[in-house]
Length: 176
Image 1 (tube, rainbow, N blue to C red):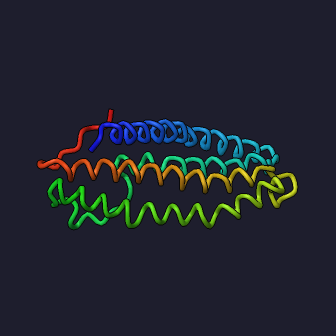
Image 2: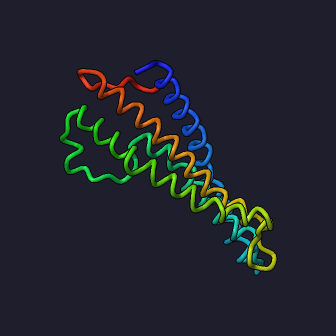
Image 3: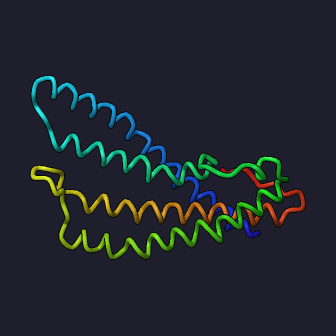
């Protein structure tokens, strides 16, 4: 497999790691916001903006860390066969999973969410609640960004699996 493809996979992995690490900070922000919401309630003050912002940070955490989690095998997988499989068999499973499941599903998400997100951007959709955050169009955009990240990570996974299958011992070089 050409070294350019391995460099592409490494670049994808670095991009998704950067986004994943950045989104992981949402946990701290969410904890601080939740603390502020509780303290404000003790004084009889409510803030819809703070309350809704928790949802926005939760979306950022879950959607933007998903590709990073996939890269580190953190997603749920049926390990009955995978754990006892040889490296070549694992690579074949990863390649088939990427090409037959992950990539088509992410393309379908992009296809179906594109008009939904575009309509939201056209009207700069905001919260349905009076006084809520006027950024719902950004939440809907997160769906597209999630699918694009996962699509790229699936491509990286397929490249690495293809490389493992092209080597006689089935070893894949560690990402740089």
